[in-house]
Image (tube, rainbow, N blue to C red; front, side, top):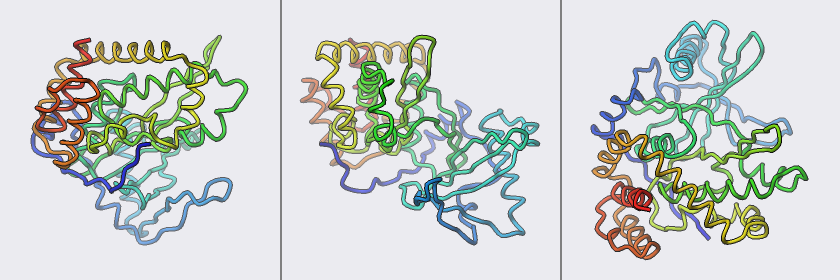
Amino acid sequence: MAFISNKKIPFRINSDLRGYLESYNREVSLPIDYSYLLRYDNAIPLYDKKGSDTLWETVFYAHSEIDEVYYALKTIYADLKADGDLSVMKHLYVDRVDLCSYGNSKPFRVRIVNKVNDNFDYFYIKNADASRIYGLELEHILSPNRISYMTSKDTLVEEHIAGIPGDMFIKNYLNEPNLNIVRFCKEFVKFNERCFVRLLGDMHSSNFVVDITPDFEEIYYRIRSIDFDQQSYEGKKAVYLPQYFKQNNAIIEMGMKYLTPESVLQYQREERSLISGRIRVERNRIQDLMKVMQQDTISLPQNLNQLKRELAYHYQNNSFLQCRSMGDVVMKSLELVLAH
């Protein structure tokens, strides 16, 4: 089983990573930052529709500041969703600002509502952490999903990733009669492989969502990461394999029942082939990112040394032992994908 024993250490964005973010239009000037949002003067617990505590708090700002704060938040949403087109703001209002006080990054979640049709959306404002930035970029480049986010000095803004939370899916959907078990288990195998190749850790059921897309004959599933804090930080190889988290056991047991070892191997190879294709398409961007990541420090020395040894044994490839940073380890993993 995989488990994470200690709270992850955040890492600041260095000048090289900042330069990368500027080059790819991720770094912008925002009208408000994370630290300013901490100036709320009251908060109440947020409960879901069933009356259960969500562990989020809805925060409130002083009457003299609230208009300024909410206008700034709408401007950020326009930057995130409409490339700064402020004309989209006239139909929007900020319905709620929530704070998650138990998470690593203590994010704010902003609920934006369209007053014309009551449609709503969310986005998040967090303290920027270099590990999470690398995780977001690798997801954007190597996965089938595009990620919209922005940085501004020490502030990170992320779009909401829609889907059914993994723990809720396991509880409420996994035993539904219309679930296409083979298709879903195949997607979990591919998700497992993506996480392992790019070394994204801590993908238990609370840290991913399931996106369900009905087609004219079938239902398609995609599992998407929603937490990128554990990008290339831990030393245990198992942390980077969702199959080893006990929270995912119900999915693993289903996969063992309905998939053969031969089909699992086929799906793993398919995903590695797709990742290889994405690397070739985005060759310049991945090279720019890895050049920065290889020179950065985003983990502890003992974690790096442990992961090098475990991956060298797993792949029977001692070149991992020559890696000097977590960026080197990720690069070596990607090189193996390209080689095969």
